[in-house]
Image (cartoon, rainbow, N blue to C red; front, side):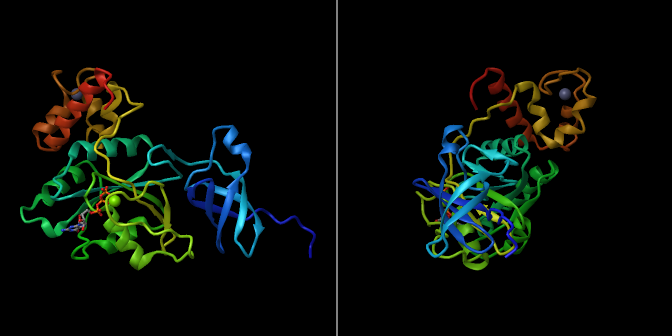
Length: 299
Ligand SMILES: Nc1nc2c(ncn2[C@@H]2O[C@H](COP(=O)(O)OP(=O)(O)OP(=O)(O)O)[C@@H](O)[C@H]2O)c(=O)[nH]1
Ligand SMILES: [Mg+2]
Ligand SMILES: [Zn+2]
């Protein structure tokens, strides 16, 4: 014995259910209660939080959360801390892609400074070559796209590589195959963290509580239920263009400062559009978002 005070074991919260938090440390998952202090100052623990715990019972694997380390990011829906990547999932068909939702998710990712990977799923159904158009539109904007088929087991090696060492939230329209992708991942490359590592259930009404699932590569993934709408909050219409990477090199060359890139003359963004350097669908949706934000409608 050296007499030194043992530092708190630190870990990451995988999930919180009914006042219990499941904290993964380097050796086990502990069922912890949070000290009351957190509830008071509106800083309650979230999945993804890195925390210091005190072990109460090593056999039963119980403890208390004593400290929450500063967050790198904080998503509200789903409520997860320290996310650094968003996987935007869409299907080539069934359901047909909701590009408004895709673009809103991409704007949100930029707002929260998250890396993005676009997963074009259900490639087994791509008889019409829809994926080619999707990739053209989004790769032109600088977003990496991965083609996936859970059915034919396509693309998972590339996805695995992208998820390494990151906390990635999977988001997208209902039915695009998010849970199927994560189930596939779980069957092959998750860490076994014992009984408490809950399974992501199949089916429609899954994932009411956000949960981090640890991968062998050291990363974590989080499933979310599909949503039909998403609000764009915290953005002004005048700054919407900064959320479009493919506008960014160009917008500073527009004739008018504060150009909205809709009807002004001498607009470099529109020139790039006409030259085929910006996807028309992306541009038209930009106008829709712009008008909605301008009217201060929630979008
Ligand atoms: N053809 C085909 N079908 C798939 C593929 N991946 C998933 N599906 C099917 O698509 C349907 C929806 O899949 P889910 O994984 O539940 O979709 P989800 O995105 O989690 O949906 P929500 O949880 O409602 O948001 C299921 O019937 C899956 O079997 C795929 O690669 N190809
Ligand atoms: Mg699902
Ligand atoms: Zn312009």
